[in-house]
Image 1 (cartoon, protein in one colour):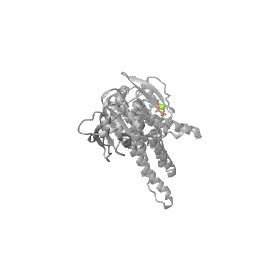
Image 2 (image 1 turned 60 degrees about the horizontal axis):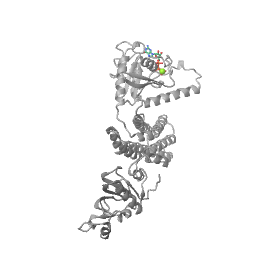
Image 3 (image 1 turned 180 degrees about the vertical axis):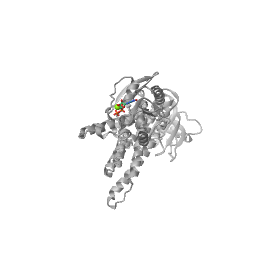
Image 4 (image 1 turned 90 degrees about the horizontal axis):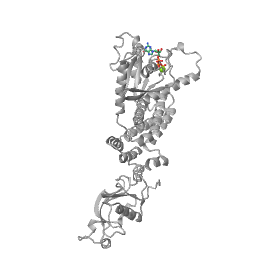
Length: 489
Ligand SMILES: Nc1nc2c(ncn2[C@@H]2O[C@H](COP(=O)(O)OP(=O)(O)OP(=O)(O)O)[C@@H](O)[C@H]2O)c(=O)[nH]1
Ligand SMILES: [Mg+2]
């Protein structure tokens, strides 16, 4: 695609094929010069109708552009066509139009050869044919819309049904760019505070208190993760809903996985930290299929690893493996559409406290109390009402859990898409990179690490967010987005 935003471009903007009305659109700094000799406003014509172009041209008035959007009745004089063509001309001056440049639209009879004739005449007068999507590209380049909105325009053109159209219209109206802008603005403010603090380090005056920084980074991380999840649900359209078993080590996740899958694929042991990777299995419940995932336990919640069981000389390598397992579990937990929190019913009070304080609960989360066979029947009376009590040993509560999971899967399957498919595919990686960088910044802030390091992560997040909105953009990305458009849009 040729990016010469100062060329004046023209194309037929109405759908191909004959119709009562057709539209030819022009955009660029020279639109007025291009249309001056072709279009004659009605006021310029004499009272009697002109019989041919030559007679008409002699008496013509020229179009004088106003500083406001205007509609003018008149006629087009096309070379090779004897009669003037009745036309309405719409004019948008600089900055008030879709493209952010002066724009003219001719609305006339929708005959394909006539419309082609208008385009040729405008090209003769100094414009060039527009590339596919070039009008929308100019809207993006002039800052009228961001890249997600440009993709929404394409989504509207390509929508096959009402839900798809709703999603695209919502995205065009700023459904994605609004939250993105807020996230970017928040991070820029935060960065401003941190960098001011660094510049005046000698003054010993913190520009932002550490707990405030930690809190704001946690909020930013959660917002970015929320956006990632929304896009993932669109990105994986047609894929299985994912339900992850998550929770502290030794909570009985792998035992529950085996019980639900009805085989012994997952290793179970009394040692915490048994599961290191993650396991998946497809499950079908009354015709509803989904993917069940067993994850590694994340310590810090529930029962801590028993120091007696930890070899004194535990190598750095095994610590690294443990950390890697946690990161994989965290990622699977974030990606899951449904999270089943497993909490050992025999360690209820401590586990629940950390369960509630650590997590940002969603309405597709479920709390399952495991090892029901090990507690007195009334021991779980203090558990939250919404929890299910199960035992992988006796099978107690498993049918209720299956029914509940089936319902959650059905709900997740019918959740509306949140973004136009092309946006979801393009932005997914960048948003995830932004969320990851914010997660790292948050951990560093919580661990009291240096502000330079935190600022560097925020820069990474901002750049990734910039790629989503198109603020940081290569010709490659523009080509990919805009080459899918049709000419005239
Ligand atoms: N009595 C009883 N024991 C259970 C039950 N579920 C799990 N256990 C025991 O609890 C211990 C831990 O079970 P796992 O399934 O390995 O737990 P996990 O959550 O996968 O543990 P990690 O992989 O280390 O995170 C094992 O000794 C299991 O036999 C249950 O319903 N009843
Ligand atoms: Mg396990």
